[in-house]
Length: 496
Image 1 (cartoon, rainbow, N blue to C red):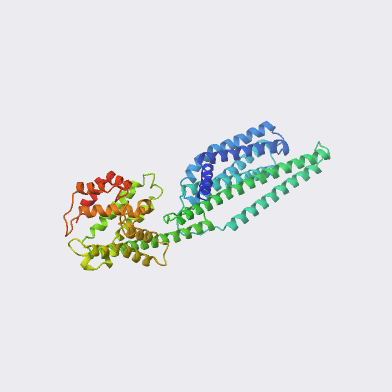
Image 2 (spheres, rainbow, N blue to C red):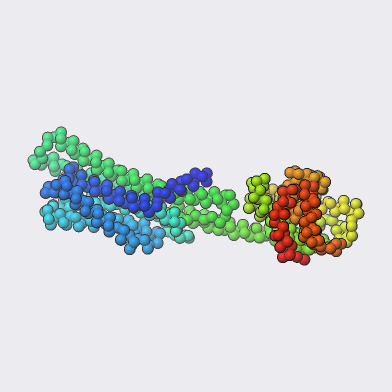
């Protein structure tokens, strides 16, 4: 679905660049020149004293003036406007240019060629219709450009209902079409009843039919173009909403909809943005509560152990460092995505939470444990898993609790199958536990305890290399070697 939305937006974005906008504007000018020249010179000559060439040159000169004036006026009156005002401003600009040119042209013809008032009105009305369609097209292109620029102001605002927009456009088109047809009918009836025409009835009817078809074709074609442009903008805005909602469904609550419109879709976008803002705040609060709970549980476990709370922080960073390095390995790239690495980092502190259930005389014993005592100590892996499984009941979808269970149960398993509690081996050991195994052993080796001195990094490194392929996944050991400088930095930074 996201691919289809991207294609819609890419196509629309290609449509809306400024070069395309200028091309469409000049296209309207050329259409008007061609239509008014042919109509005024051949189909319905409104100036008997002007030849077809003179009429065409007059139209070309008029629209050349419009083409030269528009960029200057656009920069002065439109480009500095806010997004919502631009559509109205560009509509006024284009319609005003057409109407002003028509008035100037009519005045020139009246004073120099004694054009009757009826012809001047027809000329003005023709320019107005072409200007109306050109202005609507420009306004819709301006809106689409604003959508891509994402310059919309967020927040509640009054809006123009979509139904009202469609109704107004429909009424305007119907009224315009009726007026055009009535003018044509009035003019043609007057011409048919006059004695000055040099054509027989069949030729006259054919010419009138041609006139009606040409005018109707231009009118309907322009209407269809406006509707098409408006529908493209609606599709673009809906696609933008759908794209944001798809991203949110994938977990990205920071997404927001940027919509420069002023209708129900804008109101809907604002409501969605408000809801997403509330969800994002709630998500942050939930994540903070989760992190505090993890910290409290892990700290509680550490208070009953010979280890310090800084052990939690160090192993967290070791695991994250190994995971980030292994994410470049082809065997782990698909698994170790950034979200999963972050979950590892959050879950790692709970690896020894099961020690809460170990009796003090065993857990706090300063010397070596007997075989019976060590058997009890080993149960902390299953105790931790069971405690986290109880917490996860009714919340099976909690990814971090599932990962925490994996780590708590399996971080003492060994690559060769001699670990505990389940004697898993190789790839059967979850990746999260394989990472924690190395991190936990390294920290135990380089940290001071009441029953032993801290080893140097070199000594710990040698022991880990000795366990490559037996205790540890060889690839995890390779990752350790690639990042050992950072291991030393973390150990020094968070030293006891």
